[in-house]
Image 1 (cartoon, rainbow, N blue to C red):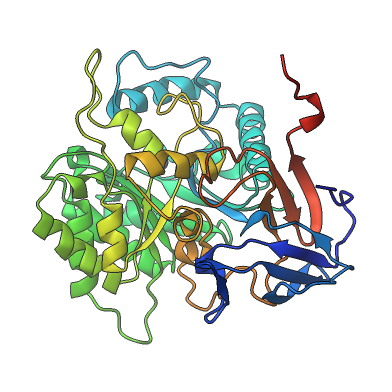
Image 2: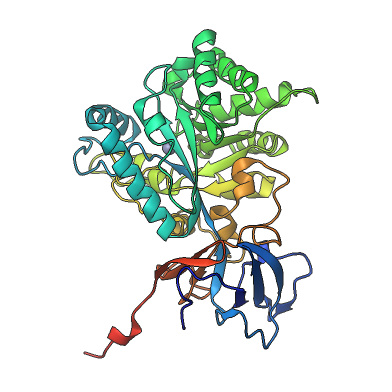
Length: 431
Ligand SMILES: [Zn+2]
């Protein structure tokens, strides 16, 4: 494959194999698979998406390579990332990781925070990510240093969202809840209110304060909720019923809500899960599954093989019509010593942990669906005419084995090649 010249604007790309979920209705099939696509660019945007035609000599030819729109990382922790080298928990599990994170905070200077977060964003960009949502821990009702330090660490090609992650106990007092929400609202766009909601801090009055303060300050929410396997975790069930029973009048504002983790859905009864999922689907709540950290932190005990997977009911949620995404969560910190800022690694993990099939044509949506993250119903399909000409090409992959063996890739932002990682076939030889 001849690569295009980095940084020169392309007229477009011919012969791309795009996933079925991304293509407009009526797209022609051949042997059950979508035919190749030609994309034309104009001023960094898509100007047309058509079934491939021969003779498009002004377009760069991708020769049938798989391609996706810019990838989404819906759940990261840039304030904690890359701290595993200096802070390793002495016990397995979520609560031990939280203790270790508090010990590591002594190192969180402005320079330390920025250097680690920039490294994470640079890796994400090289992997083809165009949108990152990071949670940032708050330690009292005023914004922490990381909140301001991570506000302007621009990485070309990436939109960065910040979520204020405060334990639910901070919302027990209505005035304190309002102070947090106000500080988030005054931090500018791309900021959300969040919370850590767990059976160890469960407080329905604090939940009500959290919901009311988000509404008052017109904030979207992204909650760490039910990150546990306890059958008595109340968070998601309470939220689903609260949203259903407190319908917002037409002239009032209710933001979009993402619920991250939701592991406890896998511990209750089928009937409970179906009821909650049905309510979440009706309220257009997005569920974000985080397979890597859940597999590492749930049902974790020293010297014992975990018996439970700890991952939310993704297939049941899909069947119920719940909006869904997959995220990496922690990367190389006390919560998860591994991790890569590559959504393909997350999807590969989900493939086995959740026994997913039809990975490229259907499930790749779980790492690309910006509309599921923002809740913006007006957002059309990525790569539709008028959208950004930003995409990732997997030059050596095939639709049967993707996302495995897919480290090689070409990343295009606004019609220009910005990152490439390819195999050097010239170096291969027989021993
Ligand atoms: Zn998280």
